[in-house]
Image (cartoon, rainbow, N blue to C red):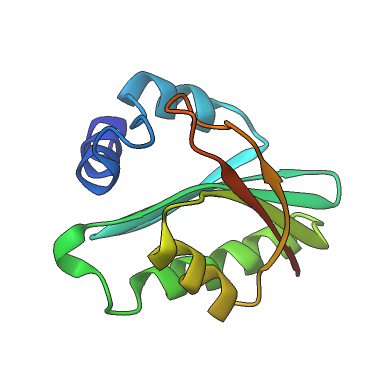
Length: 133
């Protein structure tokens, strides 16, 4: 997928909440050797590894392709890629009002470890989650 296609999918998945990423922002992220892209025709994930920690930066699955196992497959590949890069644990932030994503992460073995108050520009909190890899 091109950066433009990734940005378009991100917009379709998130609308303006939280703010979708532009193609330029995605290109900048992917220019770093710390970051990696996992993509499928209907979804993608961007992750980062630094030393022994991984961070799930975003995961997006086309609204018309949800509940088909795509996000679970992306998360499984994220874990494997992160382990291959030396990570032993992973973190993510998820919007406090995104119950579907929270349920996906909990089912995948992530656990809530904190809250980042007013994390998003809208003032919405983020739930910080951790997973042993």
